Amino acid sequence: MLKYVMIGTMVLLTLAGCGEENSLMTTNNKSSEEVSGGSSGIVAGSLEPTLTLQDIQHDTATFLYRLQNQTEQVQTIHFPSSQKYDYVLSDDKGEALKTYSANKSFVKEKENVELKQAEVLEYTIMIEDLAPGNYTLEMWLATDEQYKQTIEFSIK
Image 1 (cartoon, rainbow, N blue to C red):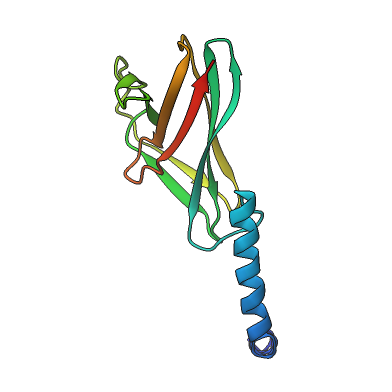
Image 2 (cartoon, one colour):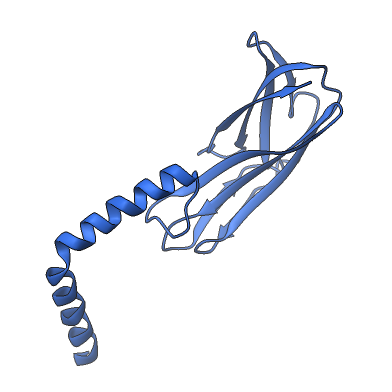
């Protein structure tokens, strides 16, 4: 017990001595993360979704949807069925062209996925038979907290 009290006291003294300097460093770290578009460390309290265009080959676009645990605790994602994600592909007029779940059935089988600290849940999505034009892809997890992400892209 004494060991924990001593460690806690040392941490508090360190933080008290560097309080102002530490807040500047935190602000600078946030700015550099915003500029780079990603984060290199753990940000307490958030599961961070990203959607990136990986490749375009002829009429096929490949995307990577990622959800990274940026918390200091294990997080559990609850899927109410075998469906893990959904998406809607829209044209530049906003008309929905494709919906992943539109012509599919999913087993009503609950599943929990645990993400440890800094662990990533990834899904690669390929959308085929795309005509030349501008598109918007909106993607999310098939859970209560959807973690929606949107990306615009073009097929030439």
